[in-house]
Amino acid sequence: MNTLVANLFGMAGASERHNLIVANLIAEFRAQFKSRPCKVYPSDMRVKIPATGLYTHPDVSVVCGEAEFEDDHRDTLLNPTLIVEVLSDSTEAYDRGKKFEHYRTLNSLSDYLLVAQDSASVEHYLRQPDHRWLLTPYKDLRSAIVVASADCTLPLTEIYDKVADLGGSLEA
Image (cartoon, rainbow, N blue to C red; front, side, top):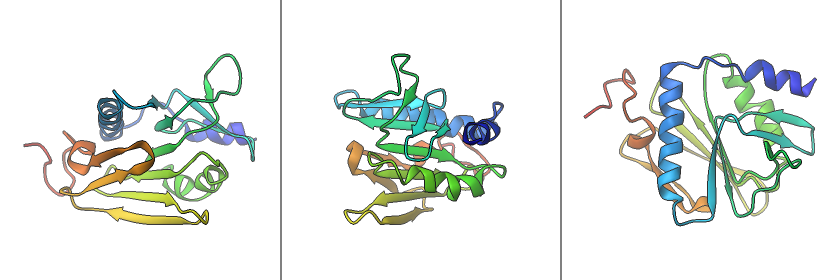
């Protein structure tokens, strides 16, 4: 049943905005990880939440350190450090609610980013030492998200590069 739910929400055919945002994130992470022990994966990398048995396909997953996989196929990640979901009307409630509830059981997960595609808005959830989650919202294109667990900085201008109609064009 959990696999079925993940497959229902893991639909192909995302919007142009969604695809541009995901491509921008992967490019930005890749550029910053060249000399670091972190890897970035697109949505084809499945993530398993062992505590609940749920399998998901996050828009972007990052592992810092040695990646752990479910089996020798190396197609199901067990220890993401950071997960990014680009929100859409059909998945937003699930990404914010039940899916995040599952993700929070991953001991390896330290950061969860929810990225809007209809406005310049990113929510950064950061796991605290007492295992509570701290939310920091970003809505200013001049701001940047510091992801300490991956030793990187994500400027909102890079996340939303070439994504138009977010209250004005973001293209220079």
